[in-house]
Amino acid sequence: MRNIKLAGLILLSILLFGTFGYMGLEGSSFLDGLYMTVITITTVGFQEAVPLHAAGKIFTMGLVLVGVSFVLYVFGKVTEAIVEGGLQKAFGRINMDKKLSKVHNHYIVCGYGRIGQVICLSLHDDHRDFVVIENNPEEIKALSALGYLFVEGEASDDEVLIQAGIKRAKGLIAVVSSDAENVYITMSAKVLKPSLFVMGRSSGKKGADTKLLRAGADKVISPYFIGARQMANIVLRPTVIDFLDLTVHGSLGLRLEELQIPSSASFVDMTLMDSGIRKKYDLIVVAIKRQGDKEMLFNPSHLTLIKPGDTIIVLGEFENIKRLEKDF
Image (cartoon, rainbow, N blue to C red; front, side, top):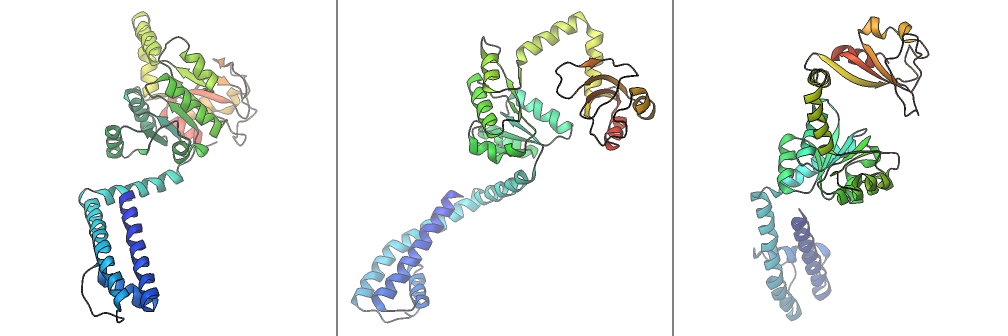
């Protein structure tokens, strides 16, 4: 697309140069000068609009030599763009930019490697909006084929983050392969939007977690540590892990989900028993996290009050969870 724009700019420059040249040398009008320039650089040979004197003829010969070459260059670039799918890519990028401008309250996934792919699949399955930032041409092709929203470039680049809609984003997940890059991404994201929730991937090397936290990451995860701990738990308590996997992934028809209670909810300042969450929606409230508190109240009693801003963790059928969420 840049080549086409450059070629068009050169063509416009030649047209203006030729037009003003005829106007200055032969005293032609703007339209006659433009006409003379077009028939000259395209070599169509129509009748001259103005009689040419010696200076005009010399100017015309120079215009032919220079102009025809650039016209052929322009036509060549346009043909190349059409043949190689350049225009299709350009229009695809324009369409992508339109979609990116409309997305909000989304997640930005920096890096579409092995971990990034799993994260995107989970977000997609959960019907969450997300934008991927990736610079690998092969991964870009895969993203395009899947229909995911993406921005091509370096995730630590402010312009790329802005294009991905960081100002409107809900969270950012930095999962590129390098600890240093994840630190840079985190720092850039926090500068652009200090309130943004940022989760960073750590390699598990000494000091990596600390550097990410210092850069502003709200949460740091080491896939190797989590994977190893998961394997150990499968050996030590397989039934518990099977149950958690089934509830988290919904294989039992049940889901563990977190919901934030708005002030408009009908059961605000009511007890769990009076709220009707268990009776009306057939959901079990596993835990409650108060707004601003780091601690979580596990297995709350039936007399526990539900306050606005609380985050409740419920267990039950997915349809019932959605029904409760709609009634907020």
